[in-house]
Image: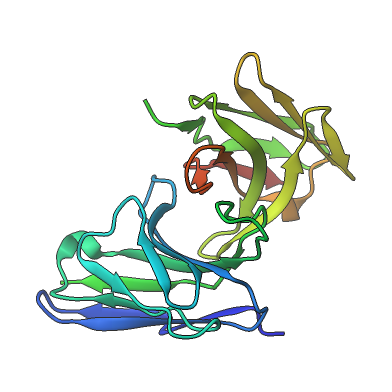
Length: 117
Length: 111
């Protein structure tokens, strides 16, 4: 199993540009998440999904959009990139049998480093 | 006040030393507790869960004090490979049970 994979590893964007961060997991996990990690800050949840076709906002969703058309894929879309979106983005997945639980163990991808200039 | 607070460190210790980190949480509805490890420029990985009775995994011991709302991680016989940032993580018991991550405590083990 590859686990959670993310592409690209690194990207530089100009202000106002758009891009999609890709995330794929091959563990058949029902839950998937997008976090951002800024220096000196904890991981902040951007969006999450409890299954294909179901997504919801996390703590810091503004400026981002997601979709979940399959169990495996959970892309994150940045529209009109801003310098405040410079960060490291982590995708994660977990398995939970509950309706409200996020699952105890989250498996993270290697991250995408984004620089907006 | 942050929901999960940790001393950022760094904690500089020699090989073989014992080192302990504490973490406090403010939400009494928190139900589950974990320590994740994050190496420099890498993704976080689960180190261990923290149980009410305390638990041990090799050189690592985790403790939970619900009354005082803190958890701890003790590392014995530190190795160079233990150098990393240790993230304290709690899971809420209300609404969507998302994980809340602390900012991490950095550990540097030197020869």
